[in-house]
Image (cartoon, rainbow, N blue to C red):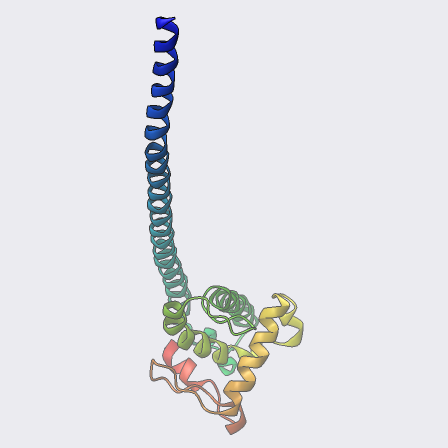
Length: 199
């Protein structure tokens, strides 16, 4: 009987101790889990920010390299400038057509990565401020090449955006950050600025 009473008291005591210990342990476990969750979330956010910075640097260096290659192709070849009055032969015409296609593909890449979408949503303010003057300059220099037939070579959203950009540019003369005055079609000017730069 004594043993039975002791066992019952011991079991009750053990149950009370276990209950008293389990509540704080559970609370501490929950706090540790929450801390780990927020720490992990902060690490994920930091990793995402780091990824975005790396992506931005990659985009910038890739665009820079592509544009450098386009400019290098144009050096010493004024017929590639966009002022189609310098084209003297069928070979130069073919060379210009291929070059202009490369330029317009580059402009489509700039549009896709840097410039606001049709809804006005910004993609990247830094890339936009860096590349928009180049976009406008090259677009105006090679606008004659971008005929309705050739527009079919590009995404419809890009072609529509170009029409909008050109309407806006035609409304007023534009001088990009480079200080090179862009040709204005309504004033009857040619792409002389583009041709001078290529020489």
